[in-house]
Amino acid sequence: MSDWLSTREAAELLAVSEASVRRWSDIGLLPVRRVGKRRERRFRTEDLERLSERGKPPRPESRPAANQVAIAGLALDLYKHLAGFYDSDAGRLRIPLPFLAEGLRLGQPCFLMADGDVLDAYLAGFRRVSGLDIDAQLAAGRLRIGSGPGATVTEALEFWERELWSVVAEQAPVIRVVGEMASVRQGFASEAEMFAFEALVDQTLKRFPCVALCQYDARKFSGEALLSVLRTHPDIFNLPLGLFVA
Image 1 (tube, rainbow, N blue to C red):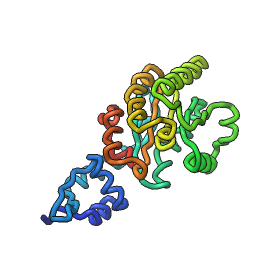
Image 2 (cartoon, rainbow, N blue to C red):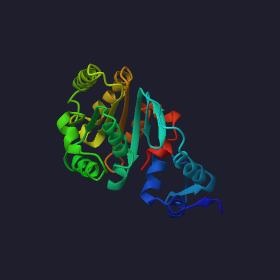
Image 3 (cartoon, rainbow, N blue to C red):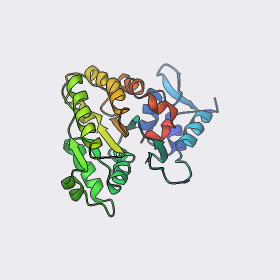
Image 4 (cartoon, rainbow, N blue to C red):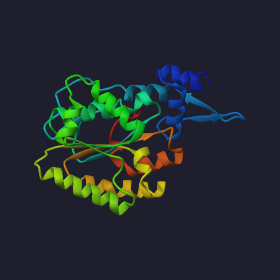
């Protein structure tokens, strides 16, 4: 058993919180073994080392091509529908803030679905980005903000169809979308309705030069819900998943 580590030891090895380790094991990102009457978690050293290696940003190479975007340390082609996971307020902005900020600097249309304190955190984060005047970006309509796309699957799909065509008509070569799904969830009658939308919007987004990132706060969704996230975002299986967990 010397190669099997406790949750605390795993967290120390990965330099993350114990909550992150538990969450990663719950969603299947990190293999886990349960032992004893209390069903305590145990982790293999080799699995932890593999996850740690996947989670390291790749070494800088060439800048993304015109038909690519940089996100989570990767240069990705367009037509992607991705998911990110976080379990802290600090982790929330790690991936989407630089992703959107780069797009705004390049003059690309960006969408942010968020409200309340979450939206306030994004706006405060943008104001800390050197050389980015977020108020000017909002006034110019390059950053478009909403709390959610609609109350039903049909409404939400029609929203994205309409909005994406509107920016394509303006000759936008790249479109960036971030959805804070705890905010989006509030607009739907049920979680099941939201995931039905997630499954269908995948087809809509891929008809446009778009990269969309759906952000899931693991403190607000169940383990079962997070499995549904994986099912409705198949693009992430072709990427180092550890890069999208904050």
